[in-house]
Length: 173
Image 1: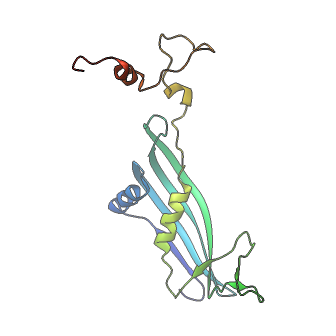
Image 2: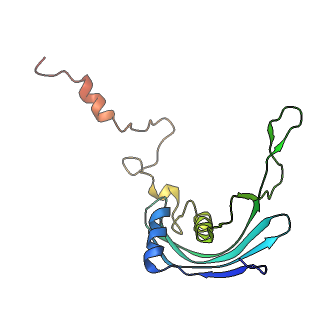
């Protein structure tokens, strides 16, 4: 990276998109690209900023039907070289910083921008994709008889049939 930083266009091939989809459990990743800038800042900080664009296909958490999500997501990650833990002068124990935007540690001189973009893709994906118009009540089993449950009704246990067999006397005993 030069003193002016670097600007990158990332456009994975079809096989790379398929590998990303498999890695993150997507049904598909038909389109994906990223624009990224990497800048060096005072204090040994490196700032990686960018925008993801694309389309993710995931399974609906209720019906398992395909759900498409369009991406247009900005991100910013700050790294710092030689990030040293602060230590309590009396006890010598590490003290955690209360900074909201604390930088990520950076060891060495290599920054894997492709991996940063892949991680941001996983964070941008909806963790619980749901097909529009589907509610939990739509996929739950309905009470037998098609009617509504009455307050005194007990739900049928899935192993109730086996319990009845257990209590039934056997012929060979």
